[in-house]
Every structure is written in C-alpha cells, then in structure tokens.
Image (cartoon, rainbow, N blue to C red; front, side, top):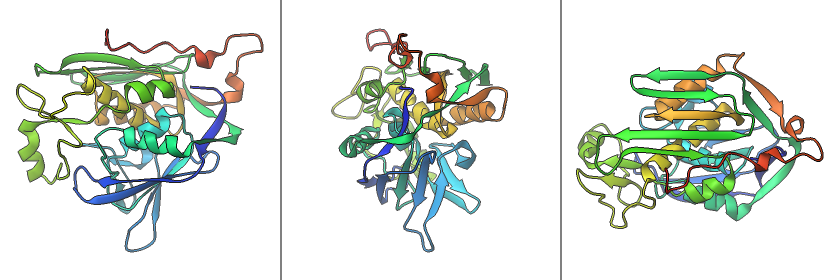
Length: 314
C-alpha cells in the first residue's frame, strides 16, 4: 500500500463466465471511474434502465453464501467479493463494474481472471490524494466460537485469518496478508472457492450452486480432493478465505489503515464487524494520503509493512 494518489483503470476490460449459483452466462466489464467514486456496480441487461449500486456496506442485502448488493428495489448483483478483492488487492481506488446478469461470473473460483483484466489495461494515477479509513480503536464481533476484529495499525493494512474445519484435509490453517498488490497477486489471487461434496444435493435443492463444477470450485469429499489437479497451495482453503475478506472489507468504501483479524470467519462475520466499525463514529476517521507521507529524510512507511507469513509457517 502506498500513501500516494488515487488510481483508476486506464480503459475497459471484459471477462465472460457463468454465475456459480444460477449457472447462467454473464459478462463483466471493468472500467475507469472519477476521483472519489469508489467502486460502482452497474447492472445492465434489465428490462428498464441500467441501475447503479455503490460497493459499500449500506448496499449489502444478503451474506448467506456470497455477498449480495442491491437497492430499495431489490438485489442487483451477487458474489461481488472476488472482483472487489481483485480491485482492492491490486491498489485500485475507483472503478465501474458493469454486470449484465444477476451474478459476478465465478470464472475459475478465484480472483485471478479479474487481476489479469486489471493488468491488461493498467492503472491510471488521478489528481487527488488517496483517502484512507484509519481505525482508531479496537472493534470486534463474536458469534459463537467465531470472532472478527479491527485494531489500529500505523503501518498500513494487515489481515490475519484463521480457519478451522473438522476435516482431515483442512483442519486449522492460519495466514496473514500485508496489503501489498504483489503479495495479493502472488499469494492469494489464485486461491479458489471451495465446497464439500456432502452439501451439493441440499444446495441444488435450494437453488444454489447450479453453476458450480470442478472447473470453478475446489471440491472436497470425505477423504480426498476431487479436482484432478489437486490444490494450488497446500493451504488454499485459508488463502481463499483471505481473498474473501479482502473483497468484503472493500465495502468500507476506502482503503483501510488497520489490522483485521478473523478466526473461523466468513461473509456474515466480515459484514457484521465492518458494520460495527462504520456505525461507531469514534472508531475511525478519514485521512488523506498526503498527510501520511513521511517527512523528507525518513524511511518510506508504505514500503515497510509487516510481512505475511510464508507458506512454510502458515
């Protein structure tokens, strides 16, 4: 994370895939947006006019199996977290995200296709300082044995995530992320969404996962990974939970200066603690990147973030 100027995309880039729940084809186009716009979803393909919805916590209307955004008239776009993770993870501040269906395309189950689209068009620096949401005091939410919390952190943005599943192929996994685009691209963008074979029938009966397949989901049976290629990382499960957290926290509406810790978390808990933070005006404040620049002759703070745990100790 650099304390510099805002960025947007240089031009448009389109990806095409299917919705993981609907199974229907959908096109998504990433494009530039003006200063301070943030991330704006544009739902096209509707009977009437296109509808816009900002990617902020106030637009969330469901978090059951994915993050769903909408307005007073109802849901507009589902499974928003992967493309938001790519944008925030790659250091984009302002972008439009046009979707001509009810879901963001699942692609291969990760954020890799969206990162490639961003790399394809490149970033454009804008004539305004980057704005940050600085966390001023601890804020936490606990649900059963799951907990998520924000804490002040003066050196940028850091996430620490732990998952625990009663399954021999997953168990307890922990990893951290240092907020840098190169770390996101290398260590998290390719981590795929995962599911358990035992849940497939009930999901289908409920109208979910109709577009899920071994091409876009890491599928776990009782004793093995069903995907022929296996896992992309030994701890791909927690890496994907980290990817989801980056996307869900993008709904803060700005880059965060904070440490975020999640234990046994998910979309619901990420959303709950984000709402708890944003609803407490004493817990955060806006700051401009210009005000965070180190004095001449001092070390550049942005280049000295705490390192993420490597695969050998995660």
